[in-house]
Image (cartoon, rainbow, N blue to C red):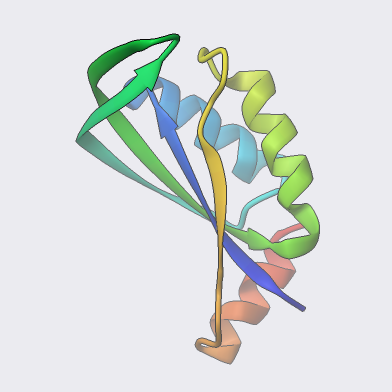
Length: 104
């Protein structure tokens, strides 16, 4: 089995909790971590934007990543939410098995 971490940004803690809960309840992620208060600067439709955002890191499997993207898009307020994946290279075998056990 291959594992990934999904890096997702949200407008605030309420949205991050909504997105994270949807991922865990639908068994698309075994766990999410939420980090509040990240400062973001980005180009959007030709303008430099600056915003406080909340980061979500979801632990899931490679095979579920496209379903994760769809779930986030269905529960997120952004027109184009950030959802990217970082491969997991190794780790505690029992923890990785737990991810398998808790995801669909």
